[in-house]
Length: 209
Image (cartoon, rainbow, N blue to C red; front, side, top):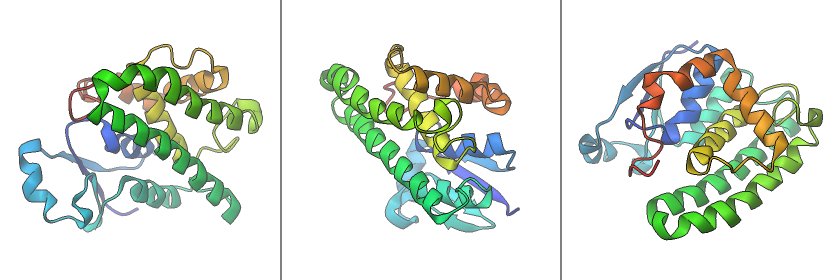
């Protein structure tokens, strides 16, 4: 396997799903932290001026979902057919739509927008995933059924952040709640989630959560 290095800010954020996938799949990688004060200088050197940065044998990738898809292919987490891969991408796009709404609220309208997001926006998105889960292994496994895929790590990190925002947000979604608990109980994920490395990191860069 290539030599991997993840570079990101000292938060969970967009780096979290990448970390979780590699940790859970037993992929060896190094991680380095970018101090916020160092970011302007580094930003100018990167494609699209974005982070996280993922190094593959010295080659540089940015865009968190590109990195997830790359690792999905490398680790056999991208389905068995082109149609399965398309569904996995579709689900990940759904996660990203919801995540984008969340980040917009967090960074632009936290004080005034949180209640509306928690009571109206988030339930609508989660209801769609609850309905989807019911069609796959009776909602007792992963988003694509019996086999885990890269989107599960992105969906899980999203759910983890949402429960910090609102501890009751999954109470009316039994399939998603059980799904979250299954993912959190996976041994390598459980160990990491409880570690100081994880618990000391804020979810977002502005200190909201």
